[in-house]
Structures are given as structure tokens and as C-alpha cells.
Image (cartoon, rainbow, N blue to C red; front, top):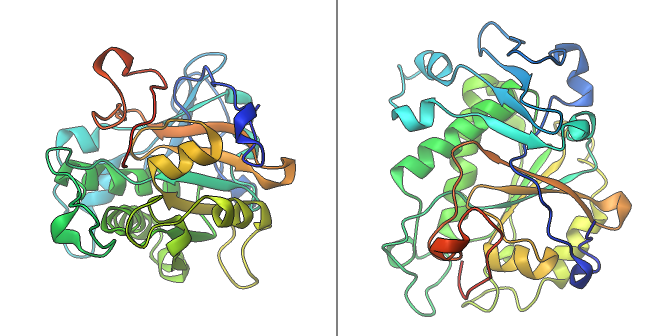
Length: 292
């Protein structure tokens, strides 16, 4: 398996869809495994089902969670309500919430009818590609599915770009609907070294990003338990790992194994974007292209 310390030895993973299980520290809350959906929490409908020998899926009643929002029932499209987190290989289930892992994620789904203006500043949201309304809903659903099933990062790092901030905000909104105290305690750190490679104020290379991942050994004392969620860009992740991932997808990286990529996770609804996957290559790991 590839490592981020040696990206040129990367092998293409023939995995389908991956997601993350309940944390070790939440083991008492974790549903037992089985073929049928198993409810772990009456308030969220969270549970895990095994789809095959290799693949599992984490579920939650997203509509039920949204209905009990403190500000009133939150609206959502059918596409965002009917979603789940799939993971493969199934045997990785017990490893996915280790505090010393890194979830290396690409920002959520964006509007590809709009392109970034040349040399746009990372914080200039009016002149760059941002998330679609459905993309924001799906990232909120992702937060509900993660927190409902015990996948709760101990820290979040994001680039300065608007689409990355939007992604983190919507995921944390989902966290808050499940566990407000946890969401309030979660630290979000903005890191310029996660910015889109070679853009204005962008990272010159992935050296700092690689060092940050390999140095991760878990949250600081007093912070929530859980892995590091690092939200960056297609180009950075491809340069670092040679994996070409969908918007909203994350690689599971193990710093203790020299940055070995254990697998990847994504929503059941995730699909290849037109910016990085040719029509005949969608559904596969297509070639990287300039931009993010």
C-alpha cells in the first residue's frame, strides 16, 4: 500500500466506497456487526450493516436528526436525506477511529460551472468556485452520519479557501445536531500550507502537509478524542499520495506506518467531478488536471 512519505510507489486501490466506524472510546455505544441495519441510537437511527464480505455501510435517520434542530426542522433535499457512509475493506472497521489516524479529505461538492478567477485570493469567495447548495446539504449529512456512528475527529485542519471553510462548517453543523457539546469543543485550525498548490498564497509543495500528517499523534490534552480531519484540495492530495479522490471523499492515513493509506471513505452519493475525471473515466481514478 502507498505511503505519503513515498508517493511515487503509490498503488491504485481497487476499493469501492469507504467510511468510518465508531471510535474505540465509544466502543460501548458501537452497534454489533451484522448483515441487516442495526440501530445504535434511538435518537439518530445510527447503525452499521454489512453489504458484502468486503464492504460495510453506516446509516442514520438524517431526517429525524434534522427535525429536532433547535432552530426548527431543517430543510433538506431527498438526495441529502437518503445517504449513507460506505467503507471498505470491512475488516478495517475496528481501526478507523484511532486517535492517531488522519482523515485526509477533499472539500465537498462544488459548482463546476464557475471557475476560480486567475490568481484569486483564497478568501475571495465571490471570485472562486464554492460549494453547491446540495453539496452543503450532503456535507451536513456527512457530519450527522459521522457523529451518529461515533466517528468524531479530535481536531479539524482546513485550507484558507472558501470551499474548504464551507465544508468544515457544514460537517460541524451535522456534528452539532447530534452532539452540541462535542461540536462546541472541537478546534478548527486554518492552515495556509493546505492551500491549493501553486495558487496565489498557495502552498509551494506538500512538504509541510506531509510533515504535519506524519507528526500527528492524537489530540492535545483536554480536546475531544478522535483522529485528525484535514481538509485540503485534489491537487495537494494527488501530489502527496497519487490518489485521485472525489469531492467530499477522504483517505485514511496512518502516520504510525509511515503515512500508509489504509483505505478511503465517502458518501454513497459521491460521484466523480467534471474537473478531474473524464466522462469515460468517471468511476475510476482518472488523471489529475490543473486546479482543484
